[in-house]
Amino acid sequence: MDRRISDAELHVMEVLWATNEPLTATEVADRIEPEREWTLATVKTMLSRLAAKGALSHREEGRRYLYSPAIERETYVGGESRRFVDRLFGGRLSPLVARLAEEDALDDDDIAAIEAILKELKS
Image (cartoon, rainbow, N blue to C red; front, top):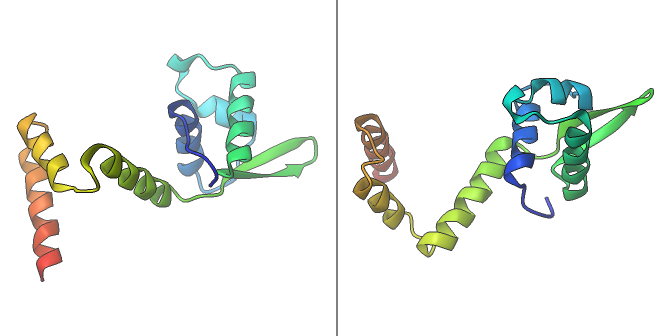
């Protein structure tokens, strides 16, 4: 992928990631949250931008295009997570976890999950 995905474009990608089949622009628009009040033209603009960035691919089927993700969600999330930690925490994860703990942003389930991950990494 050539460039980062904007927050608005991410909503379009989430629609495409949620399905296992290619979608038309109209189908994508129909699945975007109604409160966004995006027109079909807006969705088509987002799809064009995402295609230009290499985040999705498309193929012609008659008079319409079918869009599919060109990157997996896990790959994208992994890259964005790494950039976030690099940019805000100098590439270190422990200051992020400490900050979340200071803000009471971690509940008991989060702490248990982190402990389980650490235990698995140590073994």
